[in-house]
Amino acid sequence: LRALAIGAWLLCFGAARTVAAAPSLWTVDGQGTAARAADSRASLARTPPSTVPADPSRPHGDPAALRFLVAGTQAELPSAVTISVAGAASLPDLALSTVPCPKGVPASSCAVTEPIRLVADVADARHPLVAHRSLIASLGDSVEVTATEPLGRVLVSGPRDSPIGPIERHRATLRVTMVRLAPGGAVPVGGDDAGAKAVAHAALARINGLWGACGIDFGPPNELEVAIVSPPPPHLLAVGCGHALPATGGRAHFRVDGRDLAVTFDAGMSPAEAARRTARAIERAGFDVRLSDNPRSAASAGAPSDLSVRRADGTLATITRRGRMPLSDDATLNLCIGAVELEDGLRHFDDVNSWLGTLEERTLAKAFDDHDPNTIDVLLVPGLGRGGRTGESFIAADGGALRNVVVVDRAAMRSHRSSNTLSHEIGHVLLDDPGHPDDYGRDTPTRLMDSDAADPSAFGPRRLSANECARAIRQSGPRTPTPLLRPLR
Ligand SMILES: [Zn+2]
Image 1 (cartoon, rainbow, N blue to C red):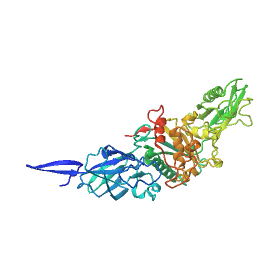
Image 2 (image 1 turned 45 degrees about the vertical axis):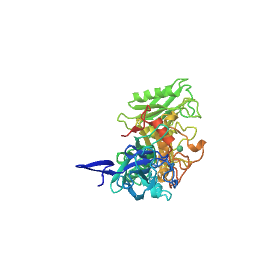
Image 3 (image 1 turned 30 degrees about the vertical axis):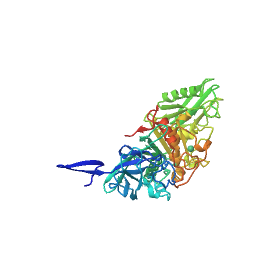
Image 4 (image 1 turned 45 degrees about the horizontal axis):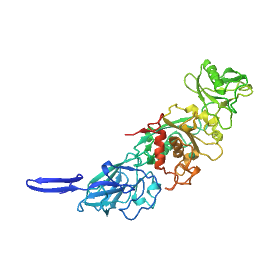
């Protein structure tokens, strides 16, 4: 007689009695703590490949990997098990090692597997140190353990332990906007529209894999919103660009979709006040204005305010100069028209204006801003300007008008398997932290948030610590005023 379900079953045939039992399945974490498989959670690897102690009864120390333990009577224990993920990847015929039953496991005999690592990709799964005990998995998968009969399954979720306790699954929403080189011109990646979308879907799978270690995903590829757009027209007027000094008294002159407009600035007016007067003048001419005040850059006295001008139907208007007239004849308050010209690369921020963005970045981002504080906007441009930078992010902590915006270029997408730039920049947004662990501390090039690592192997920049996972939930989780992460049941 063999039991098909876990437990000991008393069978009565008249006066004759016998017991049929099936072994029970447990997990043993890195500290040696056992839990019933039904109450346990698996999580994705957060550390690079490493060796484990030869003695299977000793704690293996890996914060994510689990040993699977079969408990029962000696006669019931199988000699090997097969571990598979969602019926796909599997580790067949894994030999079990007999160990003393851990505390809390009510059985006379126990046997365990090696610590099983669940990983995001082939580079990690096939690393020689861990290939024999690694399986590719995603959040929400179930890890099934089978001997001759199924023994049980464990769901893949977030970290079992962190400074805020266990982390279950959360989801964030990305909105990807790909910007052509010129109106109607080439897409930034992929060759054509279909290819560009394929690149976005592949990148999403990558991001899901790496952030899965924190229990965070960004939804399935078929739900990803990808827009392919032309660069916006010069729709943005920055009032108080340059040093952003108050007005001394003067006039602004510009043209919106061919209509000549003039605005008078009084002496002492701040850029923000002048911007509001300018916005009213534009609105009186029949346009919509989205006004946003920027924070001050380190190099200027005040801060510019941006006016994004749209037609009544919501499309972007075009702002030009009035012939040879200066945009502003005020001696101290300047105006600038924001234009996006991607042929020479998007002019990106430096340390002086990092929280503000350059005028060109603001013109691009404010053209496609969805005004949804609960999504992360990814802008993919053909190239970022000089300097070798391939991605950057605008985060809430900057206090700027742009937040939850990530800008990456074609080079970042090409090297995304080695430097994981997009996942890294999304990390700045989720962690709401512009810094890098190697800015102050030890250089750890295996960490996703390392500033400059590039390596496509399992030792490349891809790991997230439990502290970082906890910080993402604290800064962007469901209990924040504008959450980017929502719990997934
Ligand atoms: Zn960074």
